[in-house]
Image 1 (cartoon, rainbow, N blue to C red):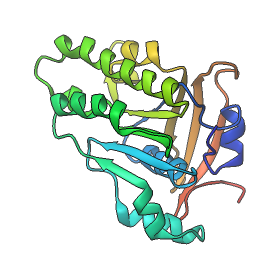
Image 2 (cartoon, rainbow, N blue to C red):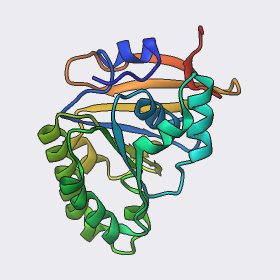
Image 3 (cartoon, rainbow, N blue to C red):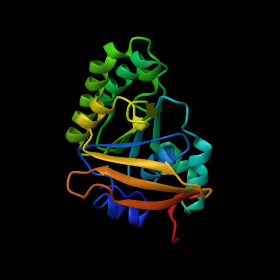
Image 4 (tube, helix red, strand yellow):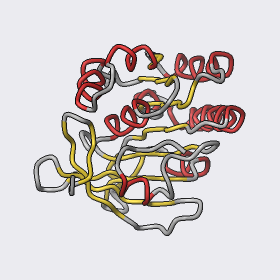
Length: 221
């Protein structure tokens, strides 16, 4: 397992981000999804394959987090291998190519986010099966390499349920075993992580965290 760098969050997840499965992290804008994924990669021992579909990955932010934690920013930047697919087709090719790219030196794969390009496609109903295939490839990668794979997901407003729900909920939930939702709170900088599903931990558990120059930290720290 890989640590999140937050003790209470690791405990919520049964020890951290699990190997061999897909962990889905979803939430609205600026809830800390990217920061959490980058932090897991920063604190991991190996390389990180980071598929950035939204342009949200910031080398400056990674360097800031590394410095604040007493780590070497240059070494951290060299460990992150960045992929930037510009549309859904290129995302499919990128995820497929990871099967050949990954070797024993990698400790994590992140797709941030899995649904950004999918959402803007005009005929996305026809692409749901393709999204499922991409998730299946990522699951194969997780199992074959025995590493964690984090898939970040966006949200949309479901008028029937009258609440925010993850994009392509059924497709992602079918293949992601551990699901973490991040929400903003009214207090500036404060967030909550809610465990919506887990292989062996009880659902509904929650922990509070802050977003700082270090990344994410427990509110008690």
